[in-house]
Length: 311
Length: 246
Image 1 (spheres, rainbow over the protein chains, first blue to last red):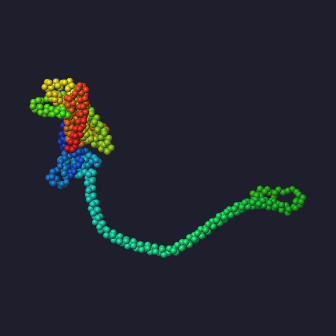
Image 2: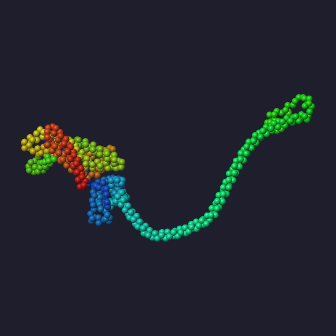
């Protein structure tokens, strides 16, 4: 009996706990809130793709609440609005501590990235613009995600289409002008063709004379070339001759230099001999003390005539 | 197969029809089986679910971080646990632990002719042995699934909080935002169906043991194998029904 009782208690406790957990999970997943939100705001949107119950609400970029309900607007409600495209009403709760939402606040759908989760973005507005009442209804602005960018490309393509249509009509006017211009260009081409024909004829008429002149010119050129070749040979020979002569001349000049040096010494000494013969000829006959002559090396180094005897 | 269908029909009779004709089944054995099948399996289920939650979060974080989308880790953990991994893995644990035990226990009773003895005493073995196990499993497997889901979330939170820098409120909000009530109940429906299949296969295997101890072993093995196969096939079928039906 004791075992049965403990089994009852344990099993019932486990079942009760699981029921509590199940209830809590169910309520949490269904968006049930124990504490009713003190401040709400209703926003009408044309399209709320990506937004669902529990989606985040940001006021000036900071977390400020949650989406607590969403419903489609009835046909009667839509027809009563200024903007009849609005189709969904989103109710958001605004957390305590968030300042009153200004009247000029703009509610749009945002996401951090193109792939990111959508959230309701409330702009800060101006503080002196007045505040929205609790549960006030405002109009939301659509999101600018990849779908909207794709949708925005639609009018662009329509514009491109109309542009192409206009180009086509303009082309209809332009084509005759181009055709006329082509005709003028054709006439000009014909004139050019005639001019080229005449030039060709002129060249053909004078072709014989030109050829003859060219042949003469060629023979003159050949003659000149021959002369040039001979002149080259002559210049070469002359160069060789000058080279040989120059070499011989240099050797002879060297010999002449030696001779002149010897002559310089001889003439100096001859001066002494002449003086001696002129003053005392008997010395040559009877001998006597010889005079000391200027050395040959001194004579050769000197640039001026020297006395024959050393003073 | 014929025995299995007969067992199911008998069970339906004793659970749905017989109580209205004054043939109530006893409550005490049901609670005893609940404790055996469910409560004592809770630690294993908790450990398995926690490790699955942790692993799932880490694997998801590894891939999603490359896309800069680690914010979606709680979403993935929650939805995967609620819809698929919670019911399937907990059913695997229960098959391995409780299903095999039921098959072995009934098989041993069959081999030792206890079941024949009950019949001799005009006690219907289905009513006396199978119905309590069947009802206990039908209640406790979804209960274990709920517990496993919570523990799995806790495992996911552990990774998100300590490795990815999520705060607790952020994790819970993301998890709740991504899942729906239907995700939870589809998992519980799967869990109830698995419970039915697992316990009926185990009981059928135990009630039709041939031979001695060897037959009991073979019946236990067959019970585990067939339960796993049936559970996985049914999981695919139910997922298909929920996928195409929603």
